[in-house]
Length: 333
Image (cartoon, rainbow, N blue to C red; front, side, top):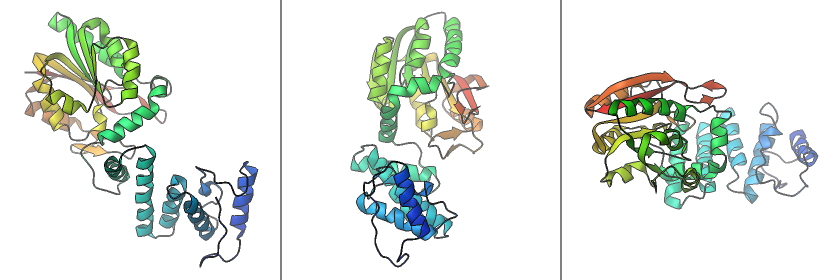
């Protein structure tokens, strides 16, 4: 709701404020009603009256203290005014509001907000995305995940994994016992089903797993952080897959170690990464991690894997172009 008030910046209506209210009215908002996700900066441009824009944002926050559009707008405005400390304050409030909007509990909100700040360089880089944040994101998009992935993103991971699983099956001359990490809606499981005797899947998102169950290819599905799950596992597998999964975790040392423990001798760890140029790994501003080829080679050597396949792939698109990515097959020596 736009609240008219006096303050030390604006004692009378500016042209920008009048234009703002008029634009709201033209857009169909009744005067005096609070537009829940209204972004004032779309109406008052940075080249216009910044003081008036600040007044509008602050007015919106009076009635909606966690309004993300207003928090984002104030952060941006303070930055353009050269007031970095104030901008940082509102960026923090924005990230906490984003975490709160996902329905996370208080402890999870704090971890999620810190991760979101790190994503834009406003906090130290963490080793991984918090599990609760991953679950919340994928629960939110589960109903449209496959259509987005196989539509505009042109995801190829499950097809590329299938090609390599066929090679593993031929080499071992048998059907495979498989563990699918971050199995999501089950695209990989469905693709490789013909080569398996059993498939187990792990994912943090219960709503994603609902779709995986509908494919009727998994023998067991676990809703858990995969590192926690495999620590407790007594089963051993011929193959562990992780397609488009490790990019939500920066530090992969424990992953390589734990997967090695549950592989049969001669079994394989097959996975994709988003390829980056940092020494080991780097968190991108989209919330996913890139890993270097050198880092993967180092971890493979440390954990007694033999790299038998490492090729550049077209995994999926971002902004119309395929990302830099690689597919690896590591054999337990």
